[in-house]
Image 1 (cartoon, rainbow, N blue to C red):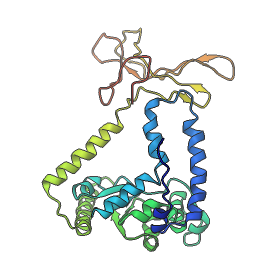
Image 2 (cartoon, rainbow, N blue to C red; image 1 turned 60 degrees about the vertical axis):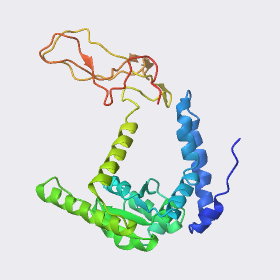
Image 3 (cartoon, one colour; image 1 turned 180 degrees about the vertical axis):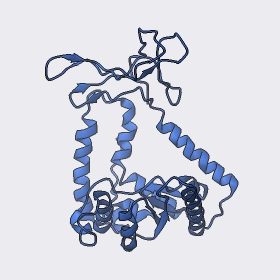
Image 4 (tube, rainbow, N blue to C red; image 1 turned 135 degrees about the vertical axis):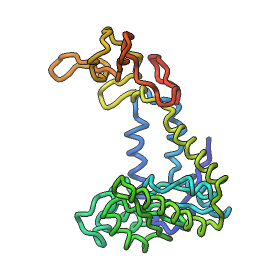
Length: 305
């Protein structure tokens, strides 16, 4: 049995409001238990992710603190526009920040208009209530101007974090937009170099790109044809290859979607099929859409995660 670790001294050193943080954890734990751990036939491979979630404010924060003690810098971001490749190339750590829940909106509305979107108010709520250890552990918080609300909110958000850097992003796909994004990426690289004290080179940037690409590939290892085992009261099963009985190649019907046959409210049985496509110029039956990673298995059981 693993020994229980007391992380409260670490949270206190980060400046968190322990009482408010305990209240937050008291809600998140039961919510995760009810939503995920209570699923029927939950795959055993998910135990690792369950462990990660159980330590999301504990062991993971300790890892960040250990990295900082070793001289590495922690970057926090709200959006994927921040290039993680540059952060990794400079031996930094990039973490996502809390903005996925509307926490302490009354505090946020004290400095923001009440009609501000919930995402922005959520970010302010976590920062102002001092309950997010990722915000507290970040040496640099990178904000990106993805909307007008963020542009204005970042003007005052800096007073609630250790250090704030704002990265502009284009609002349109145009030559001017590409030029702006290139300029902003280079400007962010200069800021990251100044923070880490390291130099960005072609070699370490290539290594950072390879690591991020490997992470993206790992995230796609669970093929698109594997469906949730259970969703509410409906039974969902992994898809199997569906072949069309028609050899018509011209005017092929659009993709269909199949779900395990279930009774509708009217008592009829309905079925939908996962997408199939017919090859033009060929008399072969419709083939299943290709798996993005090539790891899909045509079986009746879900592939191992």
